[in-house]
Image (cartoon, rainbow, N blue to C red):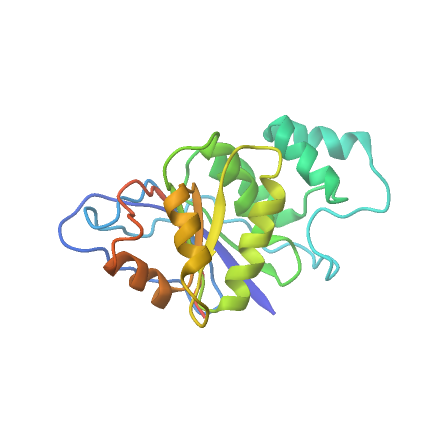
Length: 220
């Protein structure tokens, strides 16, 4: 199965945000997004071409650590992220990661396509964590169509940010509000969410998106 990664910059405009989503199976990551005040449009930049399919175990995995591969990672990622990547046993970027990480770090709009299992989550999670830097306000929102996908993304962000002070949480339906409310009130930097439960929290005043400037959309 082939899915896509997209990075789009929000543009100024009037009215509530509306989104022209990529085709089903795509992933849209928008930087500079100002929810409720700007009207984003999608402008691809340097779309990564599909790379060879990696093993189902996912991103960056090699049988042995190669110094040259570590240099590739270190050239773009801060020490805390390189440490987290190596801690997971990953040592070399896949094509989607090698082509997506640099422009995302630059704050550019990117659209990419890759097979399932090639590490698309790491391709956007690693540069997002680096761009956010340290703990502050909620600045990154990842919208997923299902609870299962949201949980996978939240888990990846937790692991990749383990050596930083960034806070990550998830909100989704079908469960109680207790833990979600606790995390939101404590303050988070990155939020993975399904749309329905996110709207519930917004209507109840539990979360504000006014400081979000990185948006990741994953169509069903």
